[in-house]
Image (cartoon, rainbow, N blue to C red; front, side, top):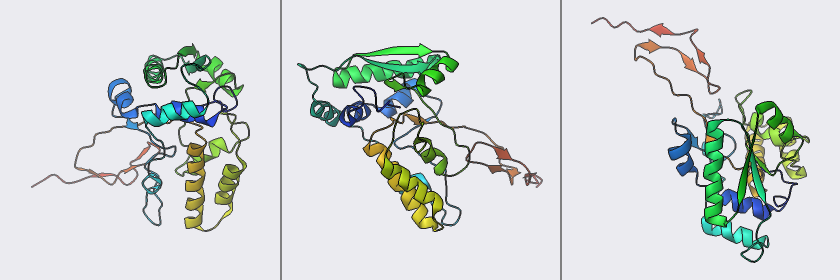
Length: 244
């Protein structure tokens, strides 16, 4: 997540440059592992409309762009080149070996693609969250877990005036509010898709991966329900007769 008010990331072209230089599949394959899924948008897959059966993520498609040439062009458009290097940049994360490994990988990518010297800073979780909420950072690790099965639980994050990215866009906020107020399901989804697109036009975040929860089940266990929130419900579960 960028602090969109902290230089040099108060310039959308710098944010776009850093975002376009990230190679997610490489990160997931070699660093994150554990069958995680590379993320190219904010709202994750698995949120399905009950009436239409359509997945919100499949409808919206990929929104993040990976393009090294474009990344360098964005940086140049922001006024940075060999003669005008970027100021010091630091990525902040909460102390954890995986978070450190991801930060180091992104640090290497940004150096390779943009020539940026990025420093790492880690803090214990309580201090880290306080630092982030105070906006005392340039780029920081962030994550979000759904409170309920609906795209709004993600989109609402950046409609909050006090969001940690220090992001405010009246059009985005109006779309989120309109989605909350309409009784038309199709129109509601349209508003949410438009709002999510704005997050990427403004390049507020660099999604890296969607977490996954692999599980195994015997073929004779039937009737259970696996929630997109990761909760398994056995109320109607039963064991299929294996005789014969």
